[in-house]
Image 1 (cartoon, helix red, strand yellow):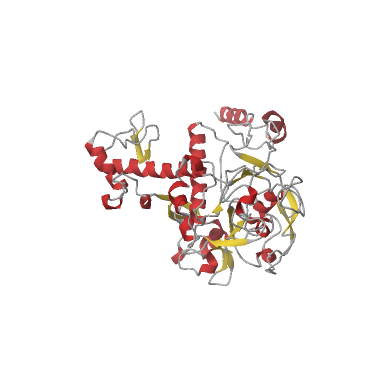
Image 2 (cartoon, helix red, strand yellow):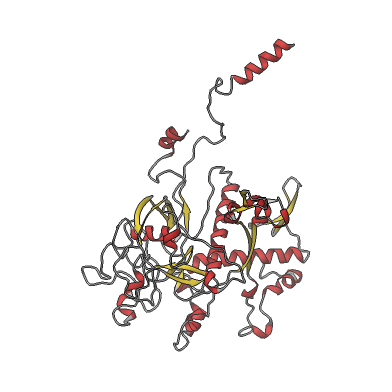
Length: 453
């Protein structure tokens, strides 16, 4: 019996690399990260951050510093009205489906509580295969959805309109910086915040999971409150909804909403990958850091103040290369009065459009005038997760690129500006990025597999 057992053990060992160190076998032997839709590849590199042409207001914010940046993907244009509208519709429809469920309408076309095999799904999940029955003949369905609409006394021309004040997106994120923070313990030992920073000695890591509830609808009134003594009223009703502006950059979105959009886009992509049983494809979208934004905007030009590689805002034919406020306020001399369609001007060397002008762009970085001095020189980024009761100075986020209402100085890639994270403007939009996991976009899976498998 002992001999039989020994033979079985030896036989099992023969399938593990003959006792050699071969690593763990994976179900998927090949991994290849394709270019995400609508994004371009930004190679890793090193550059002197903050170098440019001028600092005419002597702000001392540029403080050049040589840094290195990992490779990543970035949206080739700013997020457009039509793209952001997909986010708004998703939130609207998911809330409507849960309203149907909460009102006793448990049709699996809207909320799935069981699998096809009759297994209970707990908690239930939204079923996106059927449209929301906004025009249903069923009185119970209409009554259940009534809370989604504006009260009758607030409706224009007695039309039923969705109450945008109810479009809240709820998500969770892990505060890794808080979890990684180190602190002195009571006995004088230096220990990980995994224990030291948990309230009342809690040892559950869920204490670092943050909950956010964000209203996702853009501030369409930003066109008026940004310019009190200017007639921009038609833009409030048309810019976000009219099809003429579908491919214009979305504005009126604050930093918190832009971050929520990134979380939603990440989950949207990953939900598809899970349904396709793609175990290797894991997406993660976020706002770029200030460093990532500047490296991408430069397009490989080391000391050029503008993304197109020259020191001037015109090309050799005298045409402006971006949408901004040229000369002494002749807004239309560059071809646009306010914003223009994305991709209207030529891209930089890496295929990115409108890195300067059109709308300024949110970054994930917090603003501090001296952050260049204390951030590391590899993927530098100063972040601060401000609390609601923090002073306004702690809620400043870096915006880059300048906009349709700015002079050429703010279009320079090194120029630093900021806005408060809970503030929306008619001249600030955003674009997203996705980390690169280690393969060139020109590599093919067969070639890569010989190296990594």
